[in-house]
Image (cartoon, rainbow, N blue to C red):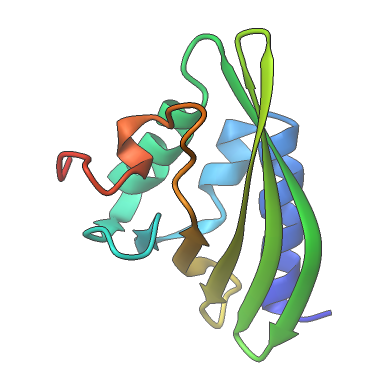
Length: 133
């Protein structure tokens, strides 16, 4: 198992355990998120913190369920099921996430491909219509 696979495994474990401090440390200072791909990239520590904070707003809880992880060099492609608990409702967003790590194993890029759901609303931070903050 290489650095990219290790980073993805830790990403999933820390996220599902709601271990924000450990999760934040997985990312390089200049990380780039394309979440979703096709929207303006989000960068740096602000993007890391916003990704967490906007996912775990009151009444919302997300779990990551990787279905397949394929590692190649400094990258890992993940077929991911995102299970959301929105109030008393359980929802699902399926996609493909591409992680790139640096020589230290820090995540430098995350690219998320997924269809926007129509039966519930994601936080605006994860939609094509978001403000660029």
